Length: 243
Ligand code: PGA
Image (cartoon, rainbow, N blue to C red; front, side):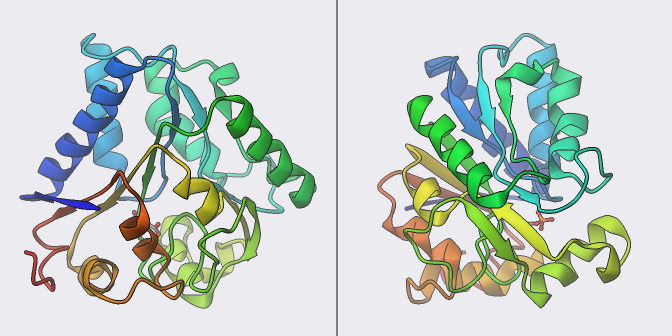
């Protein structure tokens, strides 16, 4: 695992966008997995800018969604796919056929198998970008998720419900179940990049980088991956001896 230090959020957004751009230049048909949350918004703005200026072409890229709430209508305002569409796919003009999205209404076991098959038949994930949950979760892989776990439905922990409440109004607005690519699924990505920003992530980022490699901190899985990178800004690294 490599650590790339960013000065601040803008720098983090630029550096993570550069990686996605490099990946697409090397392989325009890359299979990409991108996160939702507040952290990637700057990355998406950079990518939209790069696409509009002709610096990168995303129209041949393929996408699989990283996670989704389970049991909500497909057009629910909280649907994570719609967040990605609004911030990235629609501004760039990505065709719906290029996006393989976890379906919140489908039978979860069948849906997990469908997405795993799409990834396998698509030649595997080239680049997965993930955020860092305040409890160390990666996608909706909560603490305790096995490192070899596959795509599945999970129960959100109280900590994730609390952090997700900031997106939707309050804790009562947060669905209790999620669908997530598994840690084992993500671990098979050729490259995996975790982005972390702000002092609120400092404690868990320090644990991720310097603590035990443990399923209690799902993000510590990155340290077992041959081509993984953490991009973190100064604030997120403020608790770390590496800062
Ligand atoms: P955030 O969420 O980017 O909104 O901090 C990250 C996460 O919970 O995975």
